[in-house]
Length: 275
Image (cartoon, rainbow, N blue to C red):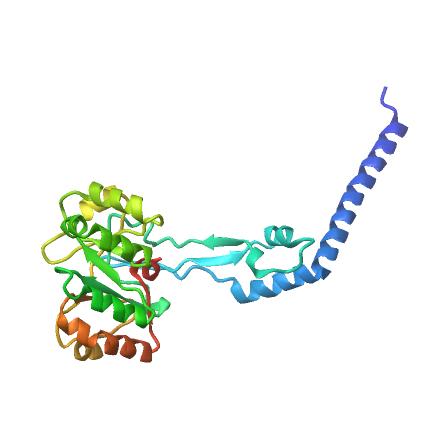
């Protein structure tokens, strides 16, 4: 037979425990909100949190979205608890886009997202005659240009290209022979594995590259002479600007960089430009 008195006693005890847990949780939550660490984290949320700026797909190819990010308040608080507020200890969550470089390996990327307010400068290397001068100009201007190379260039100039990798310059693959050899080189030398592929007039490596989960870009702008004059009429946000390794690039690169910066547009390497 059910003891009604006991049922009420247990029900009352259960209700009391539930209320205690609820009340304790509310008190702890309120105390955390009043904690100067939590207040500083919440302040950062309003400054940092932003959603994805979605990209789009056209008949020509893909323009990737710009990933957003948000602060994980609870994890950030646990990191700082007992230590005090420290921006370096903030924990972020990535807000991924549907149209991104990561999920579009099979499609050409035609430019970076206009909202990123940047362009990329790529150098189509010929025989390294002017490479050192061009690299020096880029370094003095504190920008990084991407270097379009093939397997032959790597084989013949491995030591030089290894130094360039160590100095933060990225390579863009432009060949249709042996991508495995190229990727092995990057694995040995470039720990961040920042490789990309490029379709040019005579070479289209997208089949090889998509199988290796590497993006292929398709620039529209190739400039070998009258570079600054041409850009004054054709510059746009998101642009891939391919320059040739020649005397004209040496003579005009500094002015080109100044012109782009004067327009309020950043110069970023391609990987940052499309991510």
